[in-house]
Each structure stands twice: as C-alpha cells, then as structure tokens.
Amino acid sequence: MYESDITKFVRDLMDNNPELKEQQKTNRATWWDKKQNLDELKRHDESAAPKQAYAYFPLPKIDATGNTAK
Image 1 (spheres, rainbow, N blue to C red):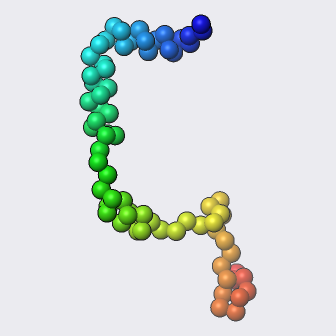
Image 2 (tube, rainbow, N blue to C red):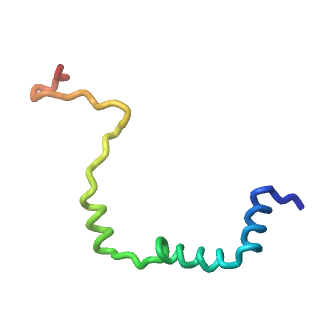
Image 3 (tube, rainbow, N blue to C red):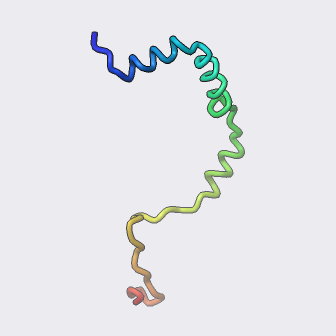
C-alpha cells in the first residue's frame, strides 16, 4: 500500500515524540473545544454590516432623480 512521505514523516514524528499527542489534545482544548454562547453569537450575527453585492468595484451612485450621479 502506498504511503506518502508526509504520512511517513508525521507517523515517525508521533512515534518518536509521544508527548506530542498529549500536547495536541491540550492545544485543541485551548482553541477549539469551547462551549458556545448562543446569545453572543446571535448578537454578533445581528451586528454584522451588510456586504456589497459585487465587491470588486463600487456600484454607481444614484441621485434623488434616479439618474447616475457623476
């Protein structure tokens, strides 16, 4: 069965440094395994500014008469 060089490297690294597995678990718990505050997420979503339909250049401005402003 084929095994890439990267897979071999990671496997050897983990075999030669068993403390990395525990460090990996600790770091994951630090950044990812957190309870979510639903009220804060809702407030964040509601406060987001609307995005332009086309982000590469601004849409033309329209004046009060409905004509394109120059």
